[in-house]
Length: 498
Image (cartoon, rainbow, N blue to C red; front, side):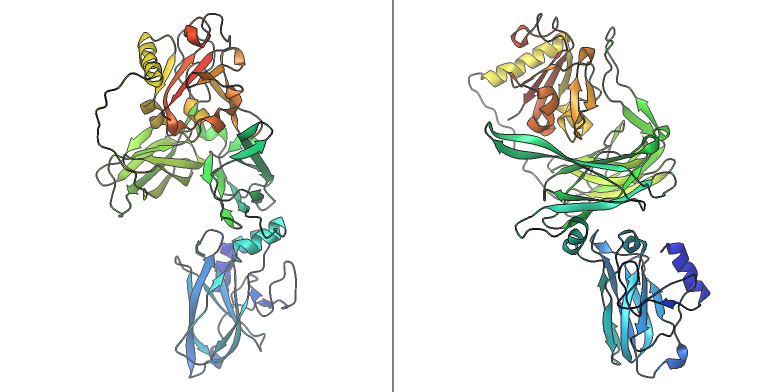
């Protein structure tokens, strides 16, 4: 039930309709009364001298946070008279003062329960006159919800599920029929040996905007994005599901009118588009970055995936990013000495969102060491990279260039690189196109990779890359990598630090 109706119910103080305890489906359990345009009120005539304070917390098992704005009802087990009702506060707490002795039923209503098509569990409660009686309520556990949405699991099945709601960034209304796509890389074994394969799991939202994706690998980094009619899209965000558990990810979608593409600069005379543009909009994000001791962290690099620009935190750990596209987006934070972190934010046009990111995993930073040895092939190759970059025959990315982009995948790192286009491959991932909209030759550490233009995200992680070279035509490619008579679609050289 909509929260506005519940709020109105608290003000109007009229009777509630009682539902039968044995009712199934959409009917609430016995004794718990759904507000019907008017709130229930306590019958003060039955107040007893020996009364108790009944209090507790309603917990959202989907998000692992207290449930705010839930309508908690307390009804005598032996009566159909008006019930007591309280709304949970910002901490998910509720309290009923001066509750007379007796046996009661206690339960709650919330829009999340309605959208999940669930009946919240109801508890029997004995009020015996003790000063305080504690009772806690919760949305059913993830394992129970998986059984409802995905069917019974085998005992050895550790897969999880993802649920959430799709909403419009402008109107906040539910989006029915929107598509959510989850992608991930999975290690497969066949006659060719072990290999990484990109997997994809699409699903659609229901009339309420609710969606569920089942049989997802647990404790694996998943990439999620959503789209719907009218050109509405979310950004690409990261999510993990627990083993045999349920995770929640709500996605807000914005249409293309809320963002302006910022094309990359293309070299003179090059007719090839430079790749998917970054976006600018009217949303704004502020926040603070803290370390594992909760102290502000200065000079952390903050960026929003798919958006132009980045920011460095000040001495107080605070940052501001403007001109951002609306929708659900990934915020990526990096700082020397810490593992990078990614957070999910919801941005709205002409509005300011706020977030707090904690970098809680430190990494060792080694002191500088002088090493004198014979030059290895890897060193010679990287020296060649520096020499070729000075000559300027192609386009080049250094490790620092890639870190500034804060990419999630290798194709993400290559977006806006002159001479390349990053396009959807139809499997929830991305492929690389070069000059003439065909696939370039791809070399990783000097070795040519078959199907590298389509599988590069499963082969190379951007955090491993030390340098990238892009050549638009065979005439500019180094001879050792097929120069002059090489691939007419261009050549991509990637150097890693492994």
